[in-house]
Length: 250
Image 1: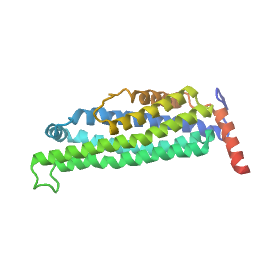
Image 2: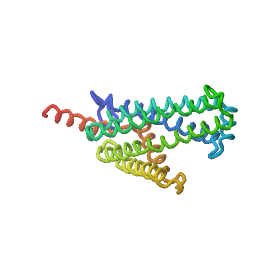
Image 3: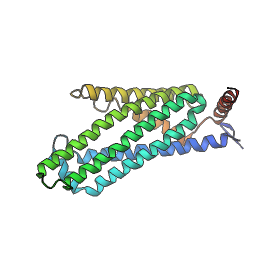
Image 4: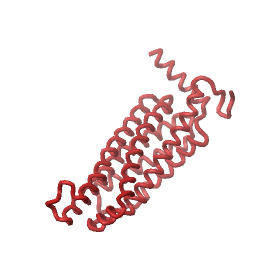
């Protein structure tokens, strides 16, 4: 069977569906992450106001629990995407693809563990095991947990930024995906890293969302390309066969 990408036989019939599955999972990740961050945490957490934050969370407890559940699903999908991207990008550089996947798995593991803090803060607000503390103290402890979660996530994004940086290099070297998308992913990775380092070292300086916008653009375009266009299967197959031959010769 022939397509605009070449003859779809053997490995090629595997390459195209994998790219679209990866793109769809990436879309799910972005949608769920944005909803949880903007609608749930952004709408309920009031920076510096423990009492108001507590009232908001308790008044919308189902929404808060939904946000925590969506976070868990997000990082499960993220782990799967790490494996799928390794499968896709290995022909462009097996060792580099493995390192890139490892950084994404580490990020997913760190971010997944941080979900505990969201549910833990809710437990504190319900006074579980903390009945001796005044409500104001419980509220302060809950907000401290949420602030700790935020700091931990900033650290995790350094690992994610390195992943995107390496993924960008792989895409630029691949020739079965547009080099421009690779450049955008590279820029996105730099934005995540710089934003996290600046936030950790210079917390009094605010860059707003500007350093994270390249991530939204680069990852968004990459996701749409995987879903709508996919890979150049002919080039992917050639590079895969060359890599397999090199490994067999070694």
